Image (cartoon, rainbow over all chains, first blue to last red; front, side, top):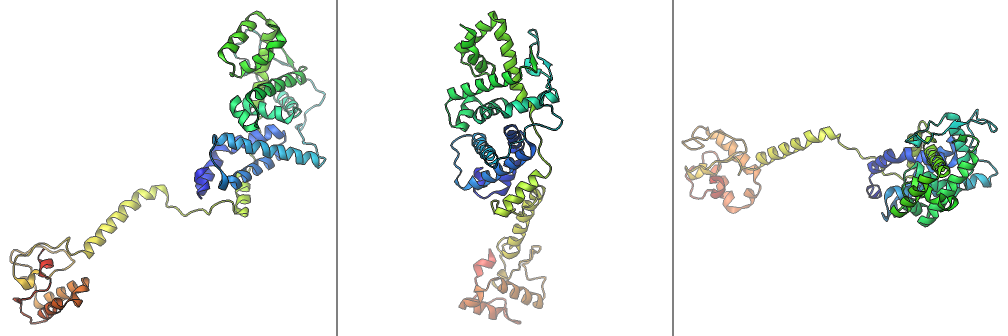
Length: 185
Length: 191
């Protein structure tokens, strides 16, 4: 980023190559819609480029990048809401009332994270994720989806680490509540 | 500890963010509580669920982002750079060209010491030539020496300005004596 600030186009191209997938993925998880995610992701890179002249490395670049990304998606969601449009979060063919039970690993399974998330369950999960309060969703997505530590999530969101713990815990509880029909232990 | 009091700690635990003391507390509770073990697995499962929501990079995403940046003037112009592979060739070539230029323009670098007669001692040329044990003028005709002298002077314009050089020029005129008492800048030619 510093090289880009000094006028290196190649530095921005390298930055884009390294991070564009993560930015698109984050925008997708936050908006729940492919076209919205694309629009938001483009805006994120525009903001990063515009901010280059005043960029100062006070934190890891990725922390700063996710701060820009989160604010951009938040603004995008607000704008969409103000326009009276709902952010589409259901994919085609997804049933609102459908129940797609999936068997969670039993007590003897050693790695519960290796659950096979079938496509339909993933769709319902995405729906439930979209229904979380934005601050909870952002904390949960940044930590579980993008691998940021609680400390880094706290920096991105501008809250305390304790607040991050609480938000992620609440997000989990809400998701478990919404997916209780699908999840059987 | 009651289950509802440790639920948040279980969440922190499955994220790998629990302190050693908190982790020990959670492990101890899970060892004795089947219900919370189920909860722990569910918490891990929803964490894994986020990573299943991946999306994909749209076609032409890069082109569109860069086009917007270009239109805003937010990107520096692309520089014409020599391909990396060419740099390995270009640098030695440039060095060789520089060295060649130096040798062509510097009489000092190629002129060998000539201990013989004063008139011939300063006659030099930028072109390398084989040393002559009899002196550098023995194999040259008068016309050749005249030509070489002119070339030598052309390489050193200062020679035209100096009075003693002017005298030397007279000495170089056709038919001039090779045993002139005042050879111009005799020290230069003689090495």
